Length: 129
View 1 (tube, one colour):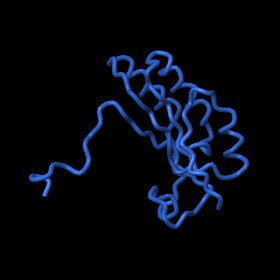
View 2 (cartoon, rainbow, N blue to C red):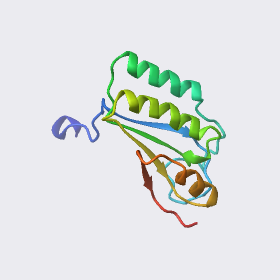
View 3 (tube, rainbow, N blue to C red):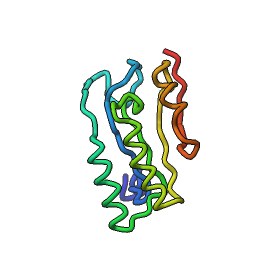
């Protein structure tokens, strides 16, 4: 079928999604992140984000959008440090939209989201339970 109509999805060379953690504060039955089926406390490190940013700048790669997600990204123990590193990339490439994808559930998550700078886009699904 793909020979006739082409691939269903096209690879993007200027948009990236980074799963920083698989921790989540919910157990949604329709979760497409596999956090309840295969719970894992593995996190990406700040050093890995620093390496990604340094590599992107070193190659002159100008991302249009960097999406930070997970499970629930605000539960990453070094979430703010990761955002700070990505903001450094944003200073180099002012056209890049840095976005956090969140379920928005709970006081802890809401507290972290309120502290984000205004230039961080928040995609909040506003889950209630």
